[in-house]
Length: 438
Length: 99
Image (cartoon, each protein chain N blue to C red):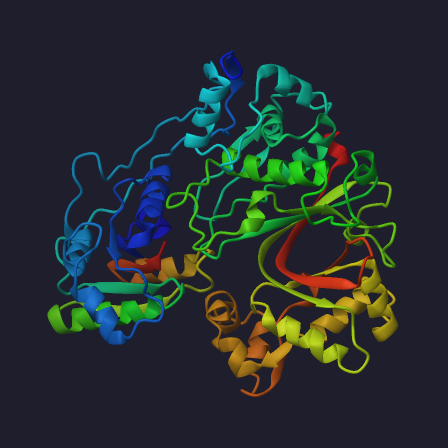
């Protein structure tokens, strides 16, 4: 609501009622607890003009007062004493929790929503001190900042705070540099999008083998301690260090996402990959260790091998089956990667990515009609952002590219029991150094 | 008995920033003769709801001039040019549908 505060324009914000706690807490955290907000029923999407007119003529489901009366009064009724100036105050987080028994503290942590609703390892001072031996960094050193959405305030955290969450996840001290790198990225594994995001974390470099991560048979499944606890730590630290992930308040994912228990956390199978390692593609040396972070993980498509006659059509169908806004990341078993080489002659990931980009197409009229493209791509096209502006000019039946080359990625993972492969719809954010946190 | 020993544990939450005061704009005496911008934040079908609010003003408060506009990009991005226009040309704003 910068327009009200920064530009001095009296403003009323209209929301749907399901967001009442979110928008009120965001306004409060931004020092504007008395911001004028009015609610209409959920949903707005898909309703007819007559139905929406009924919303407008009807009552605010939160206050039970007429919507338009609230809007008009919100713009004309003076603020009460002290309301206009907003609110200002300090907030703090104590270092310790009140002492208690194991059983009581497990309940306390769960009730305060500091867990993923599964039992945790309680972060005693002794356990946290042992975890901190996994890094040369000082406990009070600031690691980074994180928030669940673009509209919320950033929270800050130290090395000790990350170690506390790593203990809770059951991680070993030697995993801590990976977990610190994830925390330092600022990419939250507990994003609050209504689309129910989760994250994917890909570890590259020597640390994979040093700490025993799995990149082969069953790498994406719960069969490896490092993969499992590093991923769980990433999710616990995200929800706790960003200030929470509570449904209705700081989490609004409508359906939720099962990948959010521990992210899709694994090591790339560099030893069996026919191509360059992912972190090397992104500026690191093979001798360096790094973790790459992706968000989304909603749409997934999978297949077995590549048939000689129609493999191109099969891959194209899979790409069109993803949501049109989130780019594809190909997760290829080494056997599948070799089939892509055999069928398409791709000498590098770059060549395969260029081919994917060219074959991920659908008729323009259908592409632009998706609600997701209407929300997130169409506005950018209408204001001239390329290549979307050019694609917006395409004829209705012209097959246009759905994604951008730079957003498409390939990662090698799997144990070569069969050339299965999948496409994960997710957005690459960054590759963070692990060595900096050793 | 397991679970009875008293333990001291660390708090896993991060550090919140100080809440900084942000003053709101004084309200108008009346909307009659004023220009109210209806700002589509481009989330789902927000524009359709704003059109009905615009129709309501046309029918019930014809003395209010309304202008339906859209932010300049997706709802996750700030739109300073939109706010500048409203400050220069308008008197008040209704933004929707946000969350």
